[in-house]
Image 1 (cartoon, rainbow, N blue to C red):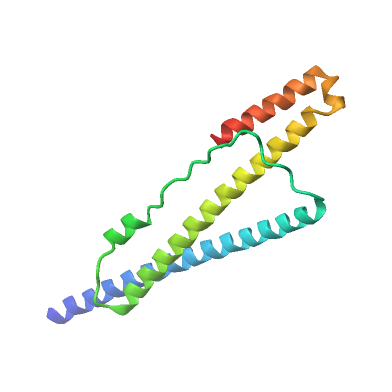
Image 2: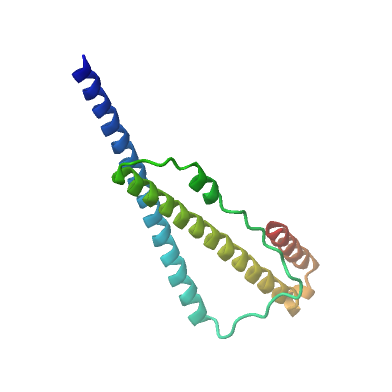
Length: 154
């Protein structure tokens, strides 16, 4: 009976380890995807920089960008201590991957804000052009787009 209980415990531990490995694999795949997307964004930004002769001036009105605090401190405090080195390394790796995902999310938010500001500047330049000043309907549409982008930024 004791041997059966020991074997059941071993099977449960093996199942827990395989679940942790699956979680780590999923997190790794997520981070790889985020890294690929970030690399594509950087390449696209470099191409756009090459195409644009000079950067646009900053808007006259500063726009606040809200950034959510990271929840990784809560995870660190809730992490159980274990004597096995493999679960600790898997847990540490999962926490590192979570931190990397958080950094990637914050970078994406920053890029979104930057692109929104650039779009606002472009629309403001278009609003000042002669073709738009002669068309009140078009000018109103551009003002609405600018207002929507400013609301999006906060």
